[in-house]
Image 1 (cartoon, rainbow, N blue to C red):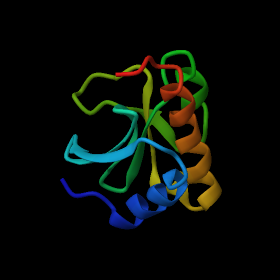
Image 2: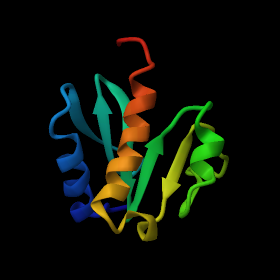
Image 3: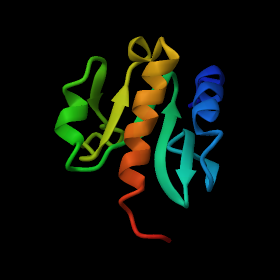
Image 4: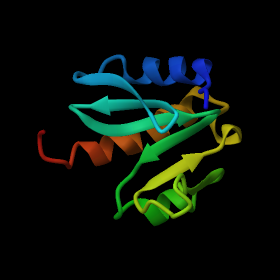
Length: 109
């Protein structure tokens, strides 16, 4: 499975000022790690965001968001955002920020 390199570049630009960001190929796409915790990623042309269980329902209520069901089962705390929800740079900024908000609550690895 390939991933949208243009979307990856747009996410890189959002994360450019954050320390501890690395990229890792996973899920057949590209994951962005912050301090070794997965924050978000790209599968084909969709953004995958780790929002955590507490913010999960709110994230799902947003336009163009859906459950991440990569394995055939819903992964609670993770959502996909369809490309229709990523047309503006501010859309990507807002979704990546949701991922960053969750990762900041995690203990260091």
